[in-house]
Structures are given as C-alpha cells and as structure tokens.
Image (cartoon, rainbow, N blue to C red; front, top):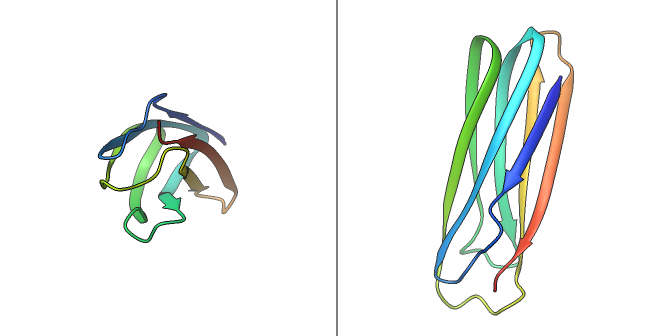
Length: 98
C-alpha cells in the first residue's frame, strides 16, 4: 500500500487548511481515516471514508481554520488507510499558521 499526503503551503487564521491524499493498493482498499489536530480544540477534526472495490483513490481535503490562532500554530494532518488484507499505511504532515 502506498499513501501520500500533500498539504497546501500557506495556512492563515482565519482561513482553510487544504491537502490531497492519494492511495494505491493492488489488493484493494478498505477505508481511509483523515485527521486534523492542533493545540486548540477549535481546530480538531476527522473524516472516515469507506472504499469498497477500490485499488486507486484520491481525495481532496479542506478544513476551516478559525480566527484567533497565533502565528506559528502547528497543525498536524494525518492519514491512515487499511487495505482488504488488514495492512495499514500512514502519513502525516505538519503546517504552521503564517
């Protein structure tokens, strides 16, 4: 299984954090769990996608960044995918508010 997470380069508060995740597994995909976390409860979230009968999948992701986050706030984007055999692939990226 290959999992690739590519975040946007600029994040502002208020604004959005954007990324794209691309998956491939010759045996077939089961599911994808995406997360966004920061030190601030107002910027936490997750999404779960079920991927039946899929070997190749791409998903664009956007989350709203609330106002009031200080410059330099770290935002972690995470992706975890399972294939049909139970193998797991993970990737993460950290961006900061500018």
